[in-house]
Image 1 (tube, rainbow, N blue to C red):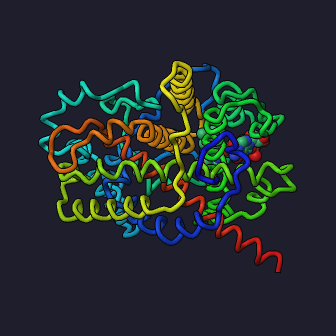
Image 2 (image 1 turned 90 degrees about the vertical axis):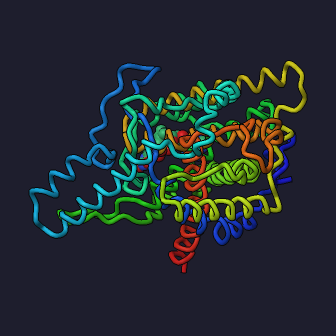
Image 3 (image 1 turned 120 degrees about the vertical axis):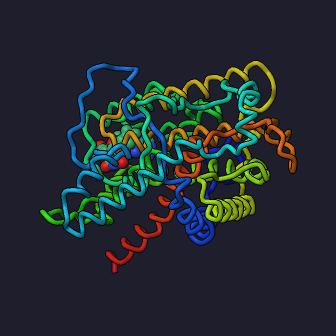
Length: 425
Ligand code: FAD
């Protein structure tokens, strides 16, 4: 019953090996290639939104928390002019080139073809705001900036202690349907928890996201640092502290299962959204036509592979029925998820905020897809007329990059498994 959400959601045996094999061989390599393309690597984000929930948060001074946005282009040009050192010159001109690409992307607004842009006003009428599961940044705000995700990898930043706990606490305690304190971890998934299946599913998604973040920081840990270089790599003891059964009183393995649960939800969303991307009117537009066409081909290949997965999650058991109770539950689910995406503006560490925002937005887009079956089905297959379902470039970029993070976490688990077995030998 692994992929069927039923009343016994938590008792299901996880067919982890099937997912590992499928992800590591079929999905991961294609996804990595796609995410390194220009369309997917530049993400527009407002990292300067004020925290809407509390005012006493401090500025994070950790150097590994800094994000390098593309406004640095003028600084790079400056460096380029005054330094003749080959190394710096090369790095600076690369920065200029990459950032100029990002600015160009902004000028054309990515995913929309000429025809669709003309129809934008019409689309707006169909853009069902209420179906969004998360708050999107205002892309037109001068505070929103392009960030090159490849230059800002998710990894160990040193963000921890009361500040980080306050965020997780606020997510679990106030926004996860379940009174839950991170200082006194309970087991919210115990089958006698009395929570309905949707609320347990919600908790599992957030816990899966938390697990993924903690896998990344353990896999790209700062192992050593000197004046000349920083050495990043796997920190097996950090991983064990967070996920080993004995060291976490049995919680670690459950958290990893939640990661797989999240993986399945996002995979299912990708499989369902295939018809949207198959439309001839859809372009991964960056202006480089050959590259854009190749990327679309790769994207469709990836989505066909996603669709072929034999054990797809069945979301129809969630919010089943059209009764008032199910509708109210869906509304609560949406509001709670939106709140979590707003909490991301309270994360002091900018690097953590960037990836936290991207991943909650990506999950929000996946949920939007899963619960828009009617609109997706109503989409014409071949004609270029207005689709009844839309995704903005920001939603597309976050959807695929968020799945990229989860897919990488699953891949990293294999690395940790083999590092641990080497240690034992
Ligand atoms: P935490 O991870 O802070 O967890 C707090 C408590 O929550 C634990 O004691 C446990 O009871 C419970 N818990 C832990 N994991 C789970 C789970 N999967 N499911 C349910 N409950 C759980 N740090 C970085 O180095 N790099 C990053 O990119 C980064 N990104 C972050 C993004 C966000 C949005 C946030 C809030 C934090 C981020 N952090 C990042 C910090 C990191 O997640 C930890 O908070 C930090 O490393 C301190 O870890 P900890 O051991 O104190 O436990």
